[in-house]
Image 1 (cartoon, rainbow, N blue to C red):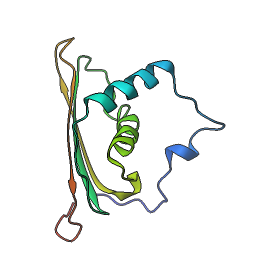
Image 2 (cartoon, helix red, strand yellow; image 1 turned 90 degrees about the vertical axis):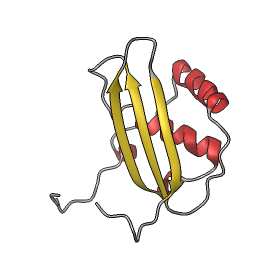
Image 3 (tube, rainbow, N blue to C red; image 1 turned 90 degrees about the horizontal axis):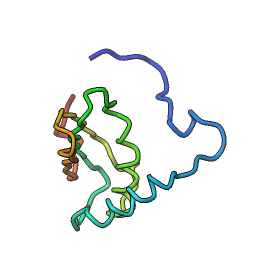
Image 4 (cartoon, one colour; image 1 turned 135 degrees about the vertical axis):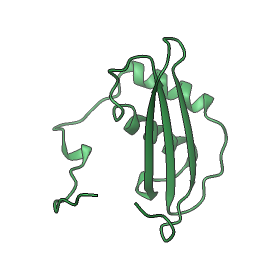
Length: 114
């Protein structure tokens, strides 16, 4: 692993002015909140694994992450500052077979290593 001595740059610091949710995002959020299963999320240290099934191989792996994490927070009542480990994977699927698989669990920071 390579180390670069610099403060990580936040997406919140990347844009000027207020950002507004699109109507498409609002509809997506409503659908996701309805479809997400009930979970009892506990702990101040969380690990989240996400697998995206994209029908386009040109889909960027990171684009859907922030909106999804924001929806997880809203549904499950945790703050994303509690996420200490995040694993993201993408798969290529046929059009119409897109999906999101995920797991949220307690993260044992003393056992995990990179």
